[in-house]
Amino acid sequence: MPGSYDNSNIFARILREEIPCSKVYEDAHVLAFRDIRPLAPAHILVIPRGAYTDVVDFSARASAAEIEAFWRAVAKVAKEEGLSEGGFRAIANTGLNGGQEVPHFHVHLLGGRALGPMLTRAA
Image (cartoon, rainbow, N blue to C red):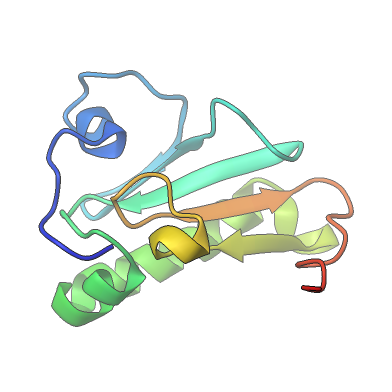
């Protein structure tokens, strides 16, 4: 999402502990928690602790340690939540056309059932 980081977004507020969350994992660089409106039996959000608007911003500005910790956390959470065996989806919506709703980089981990096709075909 173009522009500067908005410190009032819901994930920034969760990171500051102004809003509670159901944590499943955390370390110095990453927080993972259950989505309050799950779209699958397992729906976990994985976010970096740093102020990054989207995957492009994260890739450009995050340190190598942050990037490594983030993607290792995504895999660790998927495994610990039992998603690796049956398969899961990891989605990073980016920008308006990508359906990003919160302007803080995050990955949705979805699983626990067959998820169907990725997208329907455009007319």
